[in-house]
Image 1 (tube, helix red, strand yellow):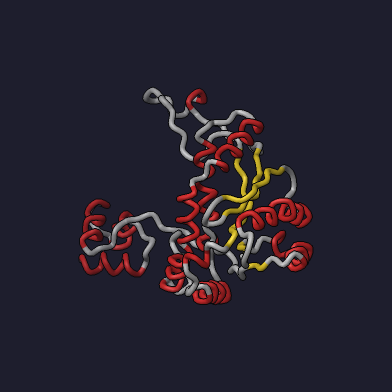
Image 2 (spheres, rainbow, N blue to C red; image 1 turned 60 degrees about the vertical axis):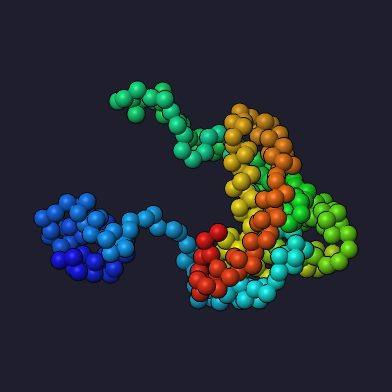
Amino acid sequence: MDEKITSVAEENRFITPKQVVNELHLPVSDDTIRRRLDEVGLYGRLAQSEYPFTHEHIRQRLSFAEGYGNWTEEDWERVLFSDETYIELGPHGQVWVQRPIGEALNPDYMTHKVPHPERVSLWGCFSAKEIGQAEIFVGEFDAVRYKDILSHNLLPTARALFPSGHWWLLHDNAPQHKSHLVQDWLFTHGVACIDFPPYSPDLNPIENLWADLKRRVESHHARTTQELEAHLKEEWEATSPTLLASLAHSMPARCAAVRANKGHHAGY
């Protein structure tokens, strides 16, 4: 019977102990099945999520990981990582409340989601040594706006961080980034872009910077968008240089992880 339990769990990796009991018609509890599966090394864990990569996506991710696999930390120090994100006004994630027993559904102790919360959008960039310029913006983010942001922020940052020698830009495959308008602007201004694979946030360390920045900004509990903007500017400037160096220097390990996982998610 233990072998049957193990076999069912191996054939259907997302089955629950309760479903095993039902499928095998067993006169035991869910906890018993849980213990049996633990004993053979099949532990219950939250499944990680991954974009449904096609064969072409996998090929492009492997090509990136192999093509840049020989780059050293010093090579990645010549890269500007850039992206845009936004932060919504109000609480995010789990919210704790001091509540008497039996009052879980009392509106006085419940959070209320705003259908269309106010938000502040940000474009930013960083290198291994320090943050670059950033720009807060409102409204639609299209190719025209992106070209304007790059013109006013990317080139001044590059001149300040890399006064001599070559440097590269790494940004993702958002439609605005790949538009003819932006591609022509990048070519005209001699900006060399790293050929980045689609659907690969795990290979862009700025995603980790955004997560850190948002945690710091949200800890201020801004009540207005003006306060949110002020905290965003404050925390952007306060970003740890040690964090930036760690993120940029993680690129060789990220590439190695993608190769080891045959093109699938790297775990970053």
